[in-house]
Image (cartoon, rainbow over all chains, first blue to last red; front, side, top):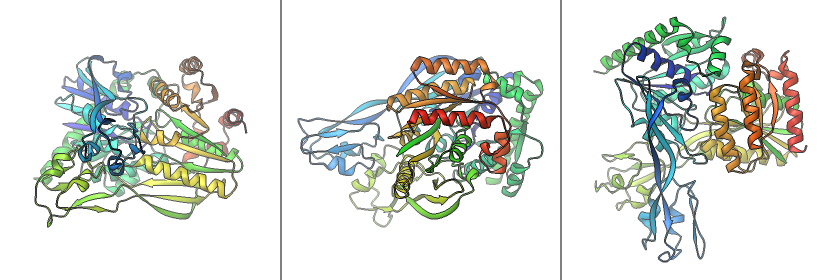
Amino acid sequence: MIISVASGKGGTGKTTIATNIALALSADNRRVAYIDCDVEEPNGHIFLNPEIEDTREIFIEVPRINDEKCTYCGKCADLCAFGALLCTTDSVITFSEFCHGCGGCQYFCPVEAITPVPKKIGKVEKGAAGDIKFARGCLEVGAALSPPLVDAVKSRVTSDITVLDAPPGTSCPVIHTVRGTDFCLLVTEPTPFGLNDLDLAVQMVRTLSVPCGVLINRAHHGSRLIEQYCQREQLPVLQTIPHSKRIAEAYSRGLPMIELDKQLENDFLQLYRDIEELVANERNNHN
Amino acid sequence: MKEITIISGKGGTGKTSIAASLAVLAENHVLCDCDVDAANLHLLLNPYIETKNNFWGMPRVEIDTTQCNQCGLCEQLCHYGAIKAGRVDVLCCEGCLVCYHACPEAAIRLVENLAGQWFVCGTRFAPFVHARLGIAQDNSGKLVAQVRKEARALAEKEGKELIITDGPPGIGCPVISSLGGTDLALVVVEPSLSSIHDLSRVLDLTNHFGVKTAVCVNKWDINPENTMRVEEMCQEVGVPVIGRIGYDPAFVAAAIKGKPVIQMVSTVVEDIINLWHCMQRELGI
């Protein structure tokens, strides 16, 4: 079972929820892995304190021009869809930060003047936090290319249950995280910001055909904003966590929520059982 | 003309609430929302749309099965695994067009790709440019560049002296695109361990691109000790901390009412006014 935790908006509590699900399941003697796919700003380690056992650097291939062979015909620069090459009368300049590593320039070069050289875009770290298997990706600062790193970290660890912590937003890095997962848990908060971004996230998850449900974080009395939306969209609200300054303070110190309140541990286990049931129903409907 | 770009390592630190409040305080300016992935500033500004424009992303490729002789070259050349059994998976495609250029049968077509929309709006505070990236579209960096270009053109046309830009979170492609050529990056941070961790990465980024940077701590009183840590950290790298804003439920209440928090009765009003004065000094305006 692979569960992705996403949100549209940042700061809704994805990492808190994802790490607490992993902790609660692990406390219940389930084999679980937590993978931090928020490669721009990974935070899960703050709550799980893993020991990193293995680090692997991740590269893409960018072009290197051999000046002895290059005729400055300009074909590579014309073909590059990302503007990563600039050809002048006597040189070809490469902007490797724009390069997506498609290999087109090398393939089309008529005089074989281009060789691919590795460029580090980040690293994937693997380890364990107690019995929880742990992995995270860490994007090199100044590298604009996170999807290949997301794919790399996602494939590094597996377990009976794998929880993927997604980056915020709804574009490439999130899509690379959520696609292919069994279920996407969308974390939101009951404000117009939360609702706006939840709606975008729901559309994104539906595009990927991944079943999803909603967790309302920092709920306060009186607001039915998210519930009404979920009812309209026929989305299950799987859990509601009340707004609490105590939880916010614990969070600021990097303390997991379930350590504050034993009841929350049971709530997270129940959340997992509900997800399991929804996924099973979904599979039955498809068969 | 000057531009302030408000960013944060972690999302949800209060960028948009602060941007909207600065919109109230500043004069003779244009507003710009570069968080094209999950734009929120419009929710506080109640804008009326003046022009709506299409954003064309990189063209999609499509295989014409009547022309294709299934040689498999496209599949072999695609570094993203986006072509399988003669079909293109648009969600994997990066738009490099290698397959299009390489196909010996010219069986691959380019299809126009409506990747989003951008809007020029009026608000009760200032003209406003924002955008919406289509669902599951890439190219957010390119759309950010477009939005900033339009905001700049609008400011020039209307003789405005300042652009206030609400940026995206993180350190990736859209943030990099939001920072180039800006006059001041204001980094909003919360005193939580996660936010502090992200702050150091964001400061590396602004340093990497040589952008003048200042920091503001939001909800500073949630954890005064961590606030001190932020301030020490910034001092070490020579970045000024120019504001502290207290924790106040007025932020959420304002969002629910759809207005900038500075228009609420709250203790944070003074904090934000002080922040604005410091930003003016940093910018020399």
